[in-house]
Length: 417
Picture 1: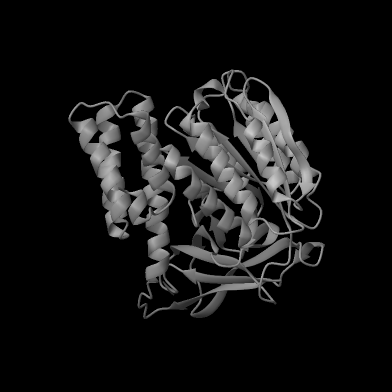
Picture 2: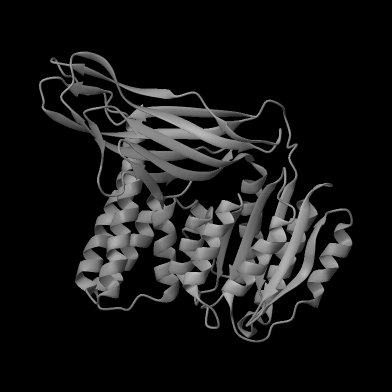
């Protein structure tokens, strides 16, 4: 398995007569297979909420979705299942998939009762999945429909950070409208995974299937991007790096002088991770100049090799006294995607502060940004919620969760209905 890193500048030219310039750089990073087909086993753990609020159709459809996921596993893959209410239990210890029918029958023992302790389920799930992580692609799916009433949200975040240290990826699935969107998003972001919203029970199959397809596309794991800027170049002081595809995430950055390091996690073969860097460049002499170098460190589970390091890729810009802009349309789309996310975040903050008018204004701004980037589904959701606030309505929990989701990604047509 090889790694691919490509870059594009928001404007590939700078004015050599100007004392400074600002440029955004989009890094597109993916895994490149050397052979067809998946050769690395999967190591999955389902951490499922079985609290009393899951009773009925909710738990029934989750069982069906989990059974279908088991059907999709191949011989040699591994699976474990942890359930939780106010305490956590290992329903299915980590094991190789050799008899799917028996594994699926274990789910029939699930019954809804009790409260919710997400951190206990997460802790036990991490313990189980860690048993099978060697030379495998390890991903945990955490599903809950409620608040962490019997647990600690801070402990959840610490566990997510522990998981990334073990090269595990955590995905969060919020079921219904009562789950804590802040904590589930933070778990997924810290765990290098994705946040999913299952608004209605019948959507569970599709969301499990979408996440499973994403896991199957993983080729390299535990990837880190190191960006080193040249003398006379500096990274933006606030949030210099962010992921903008396949979903938008504010990355945790380690900075040391002219160098910034961000953990990317898994790299997929079909969909690149796109990282947007914000740089300020002092006046440059005419001609081409390398304003930064990018390098990747990653693990290759197909060969069992860890800590592989790519070549160093120079990021070059052309300076000319006869400046002619060379705007990259795709990078502009990435800039808009990040703006949409940050505008929505500001709207949510204002809403929490009781500033409904300010929240409505920022949602309207985010809706306009979504329209600029051709995200009609996101624009519709954001505009509807802005209008509701302007008319004095209170946003429902479902409205707020849909707003969070459209801020992070571009909805498919069926999702925006």
